[in-house]
Structure formats: structure tokens, C-alpha cells
Length: 400
Image 1: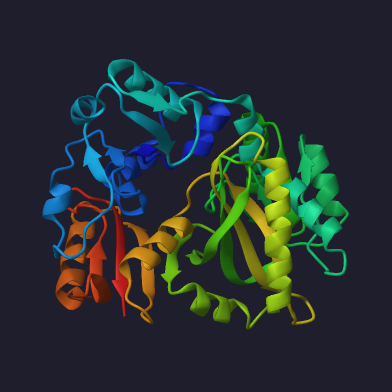
Image 2 (image 1 turned 90 degrees about the vertical axis):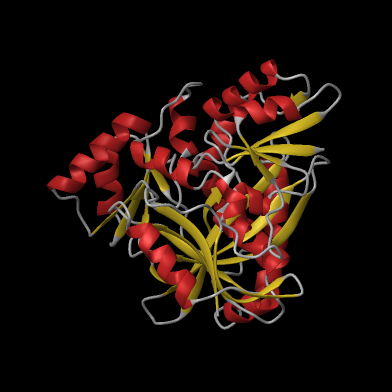
């Protein structure tokens, strides 16, 4: 069944709001516009990508006819002509939320073809929150008791509970809102809450009702396992993702390399046998927790950290993303576009000043011309979305 994709980052806030006509913050709206055509690269051949604006510049910006996206970007009007009587499509927004599925349902009412998967399920809200990731971590601890795993986060519903929780342990701490991801909704603090931290906690509790408290770890490496929950209820491991974050956890990009090379990097910190144990245990957990309610991609974020004794340790479930992730995009790009043995970066960048992103884009094209052999990228720079003087967000590959 072919799919209709919609790029809607920041969907977690829409899940929290429960609104079918949710308006995201200005910066999220900007990212949605600038990167609206990104799904063309992870879509399957024949899939369509729903863009609010004219997407015709997408093909024009490609530097090589040998490198082409897999989906087709279309405006609403073009989609209405494409979805004809007798065609059946699957709604595939980046992240499931009441507003994204409402938009898909509205489209379905205007076209002759059938669009499936446009109904919001109340279980999605529960599965999207960090509480479910904490349940998964507790099960990993139970199923693999021989390993010394991090403690399960504590969820607090009042300022007093947060203070009590922090008083019983040792900092630094990281406080997280339940409905956030990709480094957003996090607060790092020392042993006690100061005036600014207290204000943050009170605001977060007012908006979301709970926050989690966990020990801040000395991070060495961010990575994730990507899974697919199939219609049959089975869970399939898709691949490994090694990604980069800013100082406080905000996502900046992914490493591009074969699964073998990514594993070699990871196995300098953890044993291969433990990797397989965790992978199989996660398949079991996801099948129990998610498969009865959800079909689609899931990314489980993890990290390697350094203990106080200087040893390396593994946090196997920092958060669970019930959606496609940038790590999955990087995985698809590697499989579909990169030549064997090459490596590089997939990055999402933001420039505040108008015109700056366009300048950097032009410089990258000149400094790193794209080299393609037999339909595969050998080296160079490839912008995955159109860039113009008004662009602020870019998504691109840089292959060395």
C-alpha cells in the first residue's frame, strides 16, 4: 500500500494539547516549511509527500540526475488529482498527533481515493510519553538482571516531590517533561533547585502535570536502535543509528556509515553479546507495549556514559520515539545512496540570520562538489531540501 507522508516535527506538543487544529510555535512552523520535502528521501517508490507550498523547486535543485528522491512532493491540489477512485493510501505523518491525523482525515474527505490510518487513538498519548520509556527500562532491568543498568526515572507531580527526590540522591540531575524529545524539554541542574530552576519546574508541571527526575550522566556516545512494528504485530530490528547532540542534548546530526562500521564503533564500549541481548529484549518489550496499539517505526535512544570509577556503561532506553526519526532517515540514506565503504554526516542545521543558510549552502556546493558513481554517492555535499535566500533550516549530507 502506498503512503502519503507529512513532515510534522514538534508533534509531541500537539499530542499534549490534544487539539485537532494545533498551531505549533513559529520556529517549528519554519522547520516544517523549510524541510517539508525531506520525506521524499525516506519514502518508498510511489509514495507521495504532502507539502503546503509548491514543491517544484525540489527537483530543480538536485545537482545530479543520478541521485533522485524516492517519493514525490505534491501540493494539496496535486494530491487531490492523484488520489483517484480505486486507489488506497496509508497516512504517514512524521509523528502521530491529533492535528496531523485530523489534517489527513480532512484530505481524505476531499479526494476520490481511500486514505487509511487517519483516526487518533487515545493509546497513542500514553505511548508517546516518557512514562512508557521508563516502563521499558524497568523491564530491561528485570529481564537482564546481571547488568548494572541506570535507575528508572522518578516521576513527580509537585515541586515538593521534585525537591524530595533530589535530596535523596546525588547530582547532577536532569529533569524532563514527559512530552518532549530530541533534546527539548530538558533541564540540567546540580544538587538543588535554584530560583530559575524552580520557575522551570513550576511551569513544566503546570503545562504537563508531571516531570521525571534522573541522574545526569557523563555521556560519551549517543546512539539508537531503530525498529519497525509490523501489521502482524511482529517487531523487526531495522538498524543502528549513531547521532550527535549539542551540549544539552539537542539533536544536530547523524553519522553515515554501514551497519558493520557503526557496530565496530559501538563495540569499543560494549560487548557484542550484550548488544544482541538488549536488541532481542527490546523486541520483546516493544511487542508487548506497542504492537497491540501501533504499527510503524520506533526509535529507542540510548547512550554510553562514563561512571565515577571511569568505566564505560550503557543506558539502554533514554527515550522511545514512536515515529520515524532522523536516525531512521540516516539509515535509509546510507542504504540507498552511499557507495560501499564511504562515510559521512547527515545534518540538520539552523541559521537565525536570513540569507546565512543560503550562503553556507552555496559555499558547501563549491567546496564539496558531489561525486556520484554507479548511482551512489562517493563524496561531496548534497542538500536534501531546497535552499533559497529565505531558508533558515537545512538538511544535507556531507560525504568524505
